[in-house]
Length: 89
Image 1: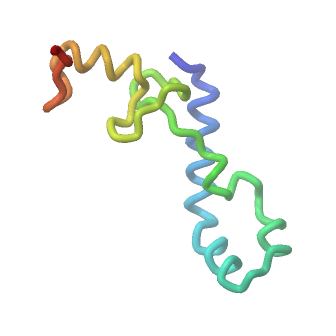
Image 2: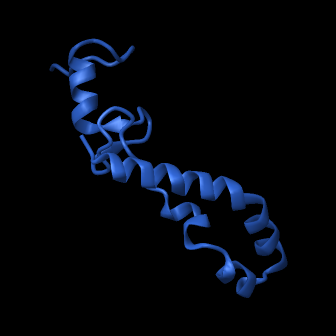
């Protein structure tokens, strides 16, 4: 499990991205890069980290399922993800 502070920091970044999204789009359309530079750093969507919804892990994140590879494996083996079966050949 990730530290609670990391999860909260990421949530705060997401809120900042949403808050400045319209303003960033407007400045980008005008090609006003000096104005973009004056916005907070966390207003950029690239600063938000993909994290596992269950464990908070950021490495080994599977976008399609929204969780880390370890959590995905546990859920898949328990049959909690529909349509996912263990490979056998």
